[in-house]
Length: 383
Image (tube, rainbow, N blue to C red; front, side, top):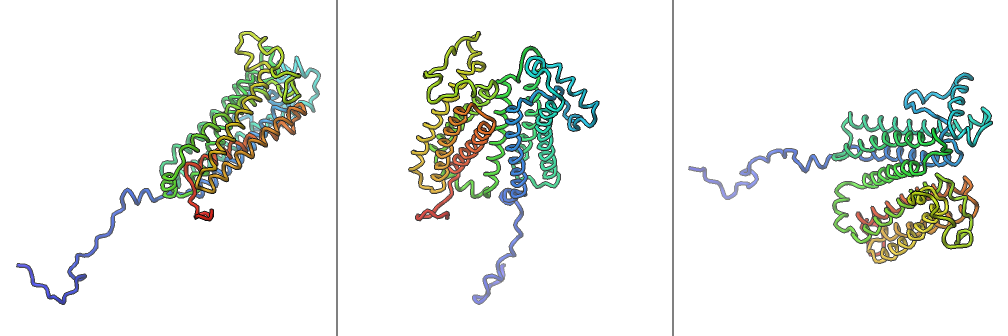
């Protein structure tokens, strides 16, 4: 028989002792790793990639991209250190079409100028690879990578290695035959991948900037229509960047220097002369510049439409993000027009390329705000 309890007995005394809670799935999910430290590391990579894009653009604008005719990922880190080393490098350059057909008679000092640009470009690539490797494997060994992020961060390194290989594939196109520059479509591939890597890093930085639980909650208030609009803007901006690379690859920005017409007409002259016909889209300066102009107009129009749709958003920070997208799209178009009217000097051209970096980042930021809105009070202050 059970022992009779007194009516005055404390209930707490009759309760069994609480058992310690065993860590489970929810507890493991709460372990977020070193999100802040990983984010800082990604910011460093982001800054380096931005510099890399700028240096790559200046390498192209100074016609320096073919000055190093060998691909030596390790040994190439050491530049020429003696007169004999410089003579060897110069001899290799004098054997390629760019020297023989365009730069014959170039002095050693002139060669050294373009050599240092290309060497700096490649060296910066090595630095980026080193920063990625030290950060990734350091976080991996110390088990500081947030759950679910190992694969994402590893892919960044894979893409970086692929970018190096594509860079050499691009350079190799200008070392034989009658090529005076690298193939424009290979240049577009190289630049396009650089922007893809940059965008991926930017997105990761934004995601890691907020706790996982906040993102899960914010996604419930996401605005699918604005996310779709931002996706359209991203696609058009990507096409425009590739077309810009084609313009730079064949110096098409210096062929038609009037606006809004091209040599007095809407269409460029003799735009279908190359055979087969598809070559005109990549190699005819007039058609390449025309396509770049038209997609630029389309991007601005779609951007203004998406901006108008964003006015309906209940989230102030989302609307502000799309405000900045509209501003940069308009500014980038004006900057492109000024670049053309001045026959694309390197100063305006590199500013226009940097504007493309800002454009991509602001579109991504607006997309992030639309997908993960920041809660705001009735007065518009962040809650």
